[in-house]
Length: 427
Image (cartoon, rainbow, N blue to C red; front, side, top):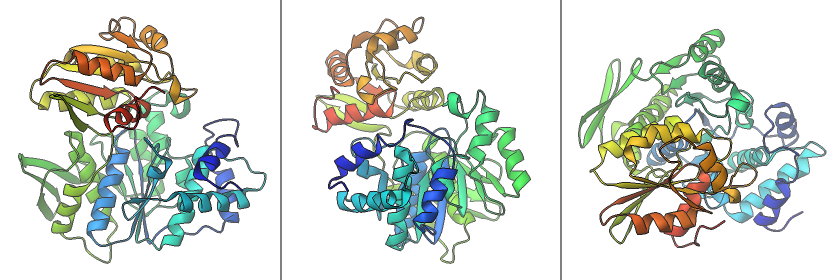
């Protein structure tokens, strides 16, 4: 057995020939050998193309404001693996994770597991032993065949459905919607953050008898003024403070979190004051996270697909006008050109960065520039890594200007490493 978390993480990376292997048979078999039960008294699973992590953060914060013991499981992490597993808002310790991985390893026998499957089983093992009132689990990829779908949730949320991971989930939103709808369960609420979701989602919900709650149809999020918005459904409404998380789209994420918790019909009714406290205190790193460097506003975001880029564009246009320098590092399997197209009118200058440090999915800055040929970013400056691009962007920004670091979780993590003083962000 391995003594440290770093040793375990290095080990589990080598235990499956593929980084992604969808399907529940293997993980279900190992979970049975681990005798895993339910991870908490109440379980909410969150899937979708974008907004999953933020929605988890709102659910956790509301649960904590209610006085519940809450577990949160998300992926990927930014700077430390421990970020993926939280109990009562605190990251799991190295010691706890080592114990969880040892329990998984003792049970798996000859069954190969991916890195994500190891992590999911470890989190579920820790949650079951923590005596949680609420567990919030973020889907890794898709839904139907994702390891998190091992758990029968009391409520499921699909934040959005858009094009991403087409190699795994299908070529269009109908195919992707069907995969994401697989987290729904018969007779249990399915909350939808799209007011017009793909027909495949609604068909699946109807076919299995999962009641679908759609935003702008069954519940509503209505801005009233700069300091108040209203969540309402038929026969009930409450006025709430703006979400602590920035961007217009966060209103939808917060509204979905509220809908799921109200749909649970919890024995302890959550009051408007508790919802307000949770919405106002939810935090998550790398989502429009702001810094100031010598008068230059630096914003770090994990946005990495065209839908997320459209949300970034909406946020930029809602901010005070500033010339914005973009530090962009997309992974090789992403639609970088689609991301650039969504933001082309909002960016004054582009600084492209290589992402080889992200592993097999990373790419050199030359490959990124080639993929962006013909776009507004194609003539941008080129840098070997995010650290170099960020330093160049800050230097190029006008006083009182803005720098936006985005394009992948890797880009956000490298940017945070520089801005928080961890290292220079170079690999």
